[in-house]
Image 1: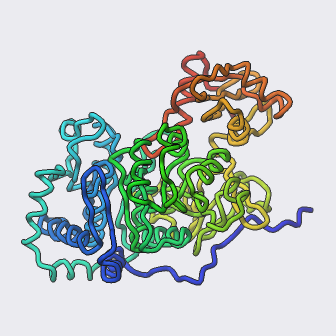
Image 2: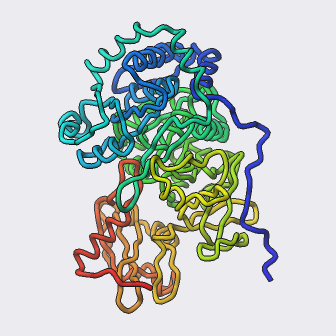
Image 3: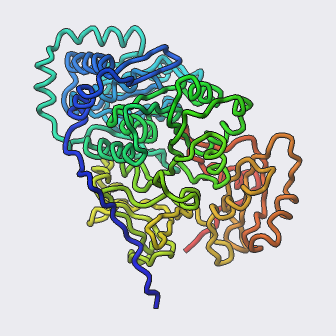
Length: 543
């Protein structure tokens, strides 16, 4: 009999959860750190202290009330990484509106769905991004609930001019009506199939998650955090903005979108102490011609999250980018988002092979997906999360909410994981991504980690595609190092005698990039669709 402990852990903390609204937190930070740098937006030429940024936030909050925004109204923000995005984030929280994050890469059909599903009455939008004309796309969308829109630039200034119609006392009266358990944000999950679902998050959800992320990173007002990750995503908004602001540190925006050269220049010029990114961003930075010329001496920490991090990439980030205290976070939009995080003083092995222990005030367990019973430590199962961080539910979709949050309030993540004897969690894949080949369960992550060790492979993703004999066959998509002549035979020869025969990819495709969301999540389902279509395969029926 296996006497190992159950794969369950809870995050103990000497610090209590913060029972306050985002507006109350903001007021305290401004009072304590008014003279400290709050925001630098290099592309816009903006540098604000907390006192200066507070004037912007208050002006926007009063203007929103003057424009007729009521408590609970949905206000959409559709823009890349600009200073106004953050102003709207804190202003909507102060007036009790529910901010709806809209993906900057959306087109008319996707925009229409999100605006209609959330019932947005006001949309604040940039003129465009990446050659897309947002105003034209909005015109093409049918949005019956939307009564007005404000375009950053002239429209934004016109909106802010209305602030004088509302007094500071009237804003204070609105803020006094708010409760920390009320919904303040809707973030749409990027979903692999069908339309996205809107995760409904409260002040309590995102304020506390951001605060404890910042605590784990040991943030102080002296920290300057470079954020090339998109604000519309929980990575930028919570791990970024909320973690930074709750500690009086400085948000540094290198540009509207991710450009490796701009990130490296910003880290050096602004003497950033922390840098965020998904693995593909760090891989691009490590491959940049500017890498060797960049002074990274100010960096100490940061976050790598969004998708599993290749071990070799993690090691290079620590050694070549001076990020000895870089941490790995795991979570999902529905859990505000972080459930586990490596610590600054964790041994190297833990920081490159796990996603850390459970976060403060959070519970995690790993269950058998079939029986629902908690497995033993070391065994693989589905990771579940419970605690203050679990969303209120999906906006206007009770059925979808019941599908993922069980009666005991456990959020079922759909991720396969293990927990070691010390409580550290390792993500081994998605339940839907697991490859079943001739009865063998194969986790793509294991094969990916092995292939990363090949000197000619920059990045790799492994998927399963239909096979009439074995159920699924293994296919590897590979990005080669520039100038490499590695071919499919070379890949397979590298695998032989190193990994089990049934784990060797049958198909190899060399690509320049992977299909991914704007937040950096690899879309394996699109790779699978490409393989099925181009190889003339058909999905196999399963019982």
